[in-house]
Length: 239
Image (cartoon, rainbow, N blue to C red; front, side, top):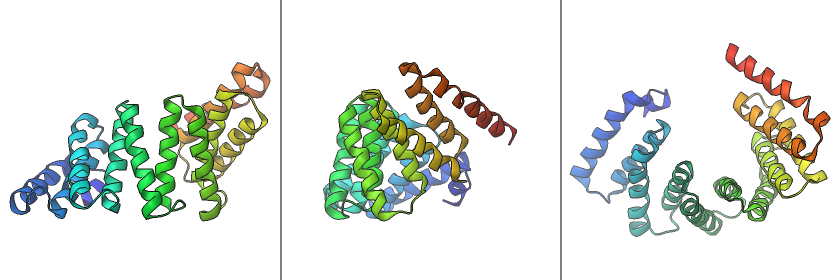
């Protein structure tokens, strides 16, 4: 675990495999400690970018928990959310949507609609729905997330900025509107003021703004944003 936390994923992998095989042998496949190791193995492989190899571990971490602990146990809900995320990364959008919806619905029942884990899963469901071009469903999901954040986290949190930016993108793809523009600009403002925001996240938010302005013929509005994105890219390369 220490190696993986330090980013030494390749070094950690054989140790994770050894721990998992030992627990399978001594405790059995359905023991909670074994399922924890299976969960960790899938997570490590996913972090290494080995998504196809991670998939059976992510599925195995979920299905026995669903059977042994029940569908609404927090560990089961975490496992189904992680499997849904992995399937999204693999481009299997309909399957990902079904599983992340299960995580959202379960967490609403167990943790409440404004719990951080519920809102995280709902936000990710919005990402999946947007990718599927289910724009109205994605907009509804993002609005609910923002309502929850408004009641539970501080103004200016990067989670608010990121969700506002994605909501603005969805609104803009549906139709040009003052709300879409306001969400895109405010979302970037929040992200840009936060020291923790990565250059990649800043560039993505700018890209959404430019993609909103360009199709509407507002070249002058888009123009200042292109060099800003380039500046972020150059600054990141120097580090």
